Image 1 (cartoon, one colour):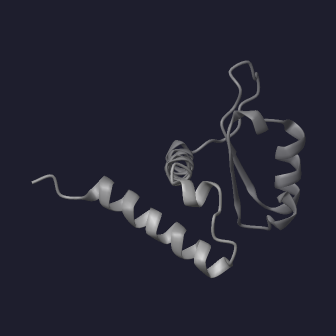
Image 2: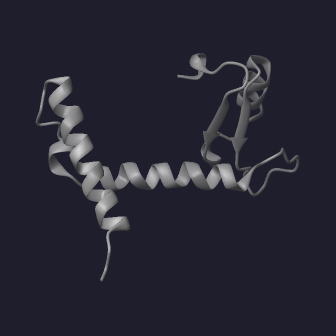
Length: 102
């Protein structure tokens, strides 16, 4: 998956991926590694909290999406049918989040 990152891309990862080797690899490819530093790290790197929060929002969405049994177990074997079930589950999540409470 790291091979697909090119110049101008941003790698969003959590603290588990905080390593000098990975950061050097991303710098060599021209990509920016937005990884939160481990608490015991002496040398710090630039880090954008706003971008990190967006990654967290995407992770939370996929967690909610996995609560739908048809999506989690992939009942539909055809790609188009599975995409339709993911879209329906996404609409239900969106309506639950942004639906009117009046």
